[in-house]
Length: 56
Image 1 (cartoon, rainbow, N blue to C red):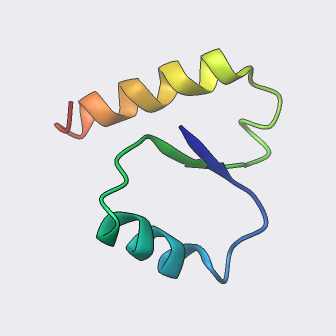
Image 2: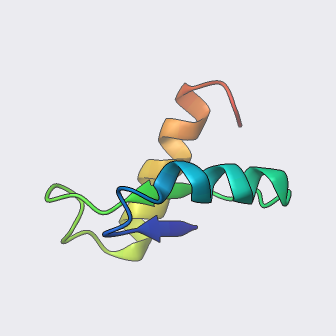
């Protein structure tokens, strides 16, 4: 699981580079809503979203 913070300008390029390198993992951007979540809660939410998108 990767959590990005403060990389707004670099995010598209970073995601493309990760994809090209074959890095497969759950990814999130830190937001005011998820800022206080535990890593476990964030991971569960990312898994739920991943399944909802038909990718897992």
